Length: 370
Image 1: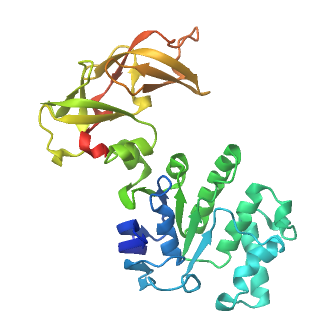
Image 2 (image 1 turned 90 degrees about the vertical axis):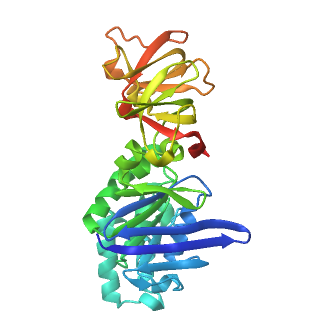
């Protein structure tokens, strides 16, 4: 896929604080890429550098093959949907959408402005709201106006700065579906910033997980979920039980680790180059939904633990467990469809066993957790 946005060794500092450390990133034409991470990881700074709202201290940013590192926002074929939407309260919906076509750098004839504004509003399902004022709209409608205003200029790249964060849960889920459909319909490149990992998994072709001003890992949602490169990525993408252990060698192509209670677990080592030796400190990651109750199939490992709590999540039960010698709680997800006919689920104080297959156990060096 031909890259439309490229960052090469980009560095950005604010005084003594380095927000980005040698960022290298390629975004393909028509991709939906998400920058994901906690506050302060550098994702918004990266977005602002691409949009031209900040200037890189080192490195190079290209758009469709042209160097735009020092170019101001109005000279980049990029538009942004801001977190707070930034609508003009004194303008109608149509006037807000058309605004980008009236400024000197991108001014269009009146007939074209009217046509493109109508097209943009129809695209986001607001053709009948053109004469409304922003304060007369719901949160979801204001978000769509902001999308229409960004799309009316027909940019090569659309930047989305946490566009759904101001919406309530149900509306956010509905807007995720609409945003996905909009991207598929337009075929232009979307680059989104979010701290919501579920949103990133649902919407993205690829996700760049950021940590401390660096890209910890980039890949498809399934790649990051199934084979996270570090414990940080495993813990940030979805939920993961991270357990300290001791490396106990290899057997039949699988690594073996020993937990504090003496249990031996087989797993897959994500980084063979880690050079783990028998007796080294290690760390395993297991997804809660990968731990299964009942008899263990051949090749699986078994954990025996005590139930601490039972949490109801509608379609599933989340069971909190205590494993001897392990301070951190362990969580196991049990779908309601698998609960026994009498509706019973493990109760606090019960001693139960769970098994896990080697392919579902990820093994890391203890140092990788830093």
